[in-house]
Structure formats: structure tokens, C-alpha cells
Length: 301
Ligand code: ADP
Image (cartoon, rainbow, N blue to C red; front, side, top):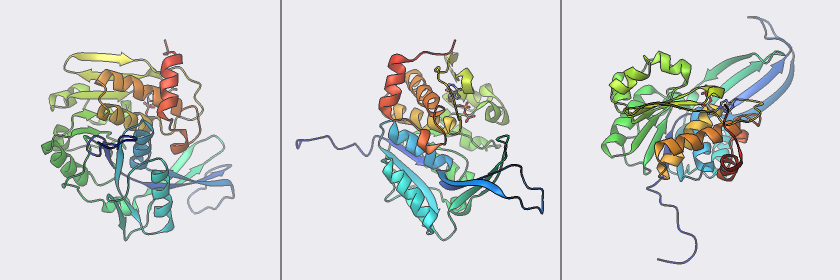
């Protein structure tokens, strides 16, 4: 044993398999009709994609976190990798540079705040299954990379004894084999309906179903019953990224050894804080900010 800070244990941590996108956001008075051009008011680029967002949330929550993703060899790919690395996410041996453009979301926002979005998966669609050793103790994935790749990666991770966590977003029908390889499924209200409801997931062998309910908090369902964890009281300005923050923070706290109920409370506090700042990645809180909210904040009645 040498002196100084302990090295992070690379085998105890979170592996996030998922998408990385560059979001291109234009605002305009109104949306163009098909075939029409309108002049915009403003433009901004933001890092995004559920995989990247959730990896940043896990890392800021204090877990050793690795992102398994595919981006292009274009400058946008480099930008996204810089964002991940700056947040402390490990990317070196697990992000593919694919011969496809980096995934992009083209987002138009009108004066009412209504979005219309075209997502071009690009490199994300080339993400293969990762059946070799990934490190980590918790594997977290969403559905913005090919579902066959998620399914094969989960099956291999299960055989190695990792805890598998699926955020089934965006909402989709999911093969029962994949659901059967999930220890924990974290849908929102809309997504859980697409999956046939909480009881159906428990019947397929999922150990815990954690349904995020926005300002109404979180429903946790497992073999011992169903409990609501009320949301933390905050003044929200932008709920973009709340679900991603919840999932990343939950996976981190499970990897760090929290019991499920404590991990849910901690992740809900992280997600609540994320609603108090605009954007996704910039709004993901540090562990210190979450600890402070838990020590000083209140739950909604
Ligand atoms: P999604 O964006 O994926 O639909 P939710 O809207 O359910 O996810 O939000 C995820 C979690 O974020 C919620 O379960 C809750 O803990 C927290 N959250 C969301 N909105 C609020 C809010 N207005 N106040 C406090 N916490 C919130």
C-alpha cells in the first residue's frame, strides 16, 4: 500500500452504454410549414444524448464511470468526448470513433416553447454489442442505441454478475428476453405503459421497477410492495435532463453500495436540483450540492 489518495477501484463503478449527440437548437417565432423557410431568433449547440447525460450524472454523483458509446470522427465527436472527460467520465478504451457522422438532434423551438425535433442517430446506430469484460459493477443503458446491442450486452453482463439497469427511453416495445435480463427498470409514466405496466415487469423477473413521476416523485415497486418517494421541493425552471440525472445518480449510488431506497432518495434529490438550471449537462449537480439539498431541503407534501 502506497501513501496518498486511494486509486479509484476500476472494478467498482458504473458502465453506461448509450448515445452521445450534439443538440442543435434554433428558436423562431413559429415553426416553418413543410417547404417553408422562417428566420430564426437564436441558435445554440449543446452536448446531449441519454448515454452521455447519464454518464455525466453518474460521475458527478461520485462513482467511477465509464461511457461505452459511438461518435463520429468529425469535430462534433471530439466536442462530446471533451465534455465527458471534463466531467470525469472514462472514455479512453470504450468510445468508438465510427465512420458515420456523430449523432445530432435538430431542435426547433417556437415562441410558446413548443419543440419539434429530428434526431439523426448517425454513429449511435453503429454501436455493437459489448460482450467482453467491461469493468464496473453496475451496467446502465437506454434505447438510443440499437436494442439488439443492449440486449446482448445485458445478457453478457448478467452472466458476469453485474447489476443491470435499463432506462427504457425513448418509449418502445422491448423484447421479453431483454426485460428478463434487467435487475432494475427505470421508466417514466408513459414508458411503463408501453411495457405493459409495473406488475408485468415484476412477473418477467425484474427485481425492482422504479417509475419516475415528475413533480410527484418516484414509485418503487419490488417483491416487498410499492412505495412512493415524494419529490424534493425546488423551484424548477427547466426539467430537461431530470430523468437522465435520476438514472445516472441512481446507478452511481447503487455501485457505491447504497441500499435501493437510499439510492432512490439521493437520485431524486439530484434530479430535483437538475430542474433548477437550464439545459441537460450544465444542470447535473455535483455530489456536494445533492448532499446539501438532502441535509437542508424538504420533500413535497
Ligand atoms: P422524465 O423527464 O424522464 O419524464 P421525470 O419528469 O419523471 O422524468 O423526472 C425524473 C425525476 O426528477 C422525478 O422522479 C423527480 O424525482 C425529479 N423531478 C422532476 N420534476 C421535478 C420537480 N418539478 N420537482 C422536484 N423533482 C422533480
